Length: 114
Image (tube, rainbow, N blue to C red; front, top):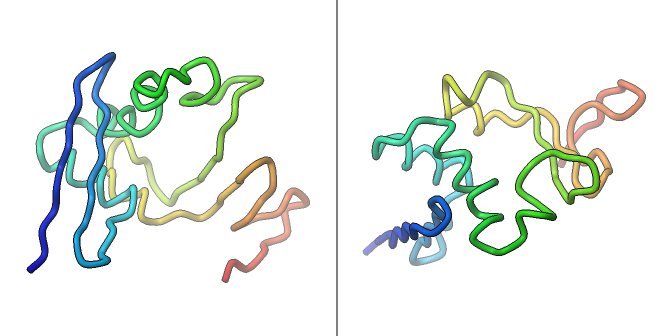
């Protein structure tokens, strides 16, 4: 039997977590798709895993937005997630800790991701 436990916490915004049972953990993109299907706008859903999550953790001064001096991983997707939240399932570029780990390198040469 598969079951999902959804937890929505209201405190300085909405923090969202989804847990899968029997080893099927949904991706962040899948979690956001669920929120949009439940009635949130794509922007509201994105905020649950960025700005709102940072506020809930008490880390709003360090993470949650792309600002100088903050910790952030960056992705680029094929499409506009504010129009189509499913675009988050089409990741083309990932920068983690300041290093490109998927997609175009700093020199513009495409790098394979495995």
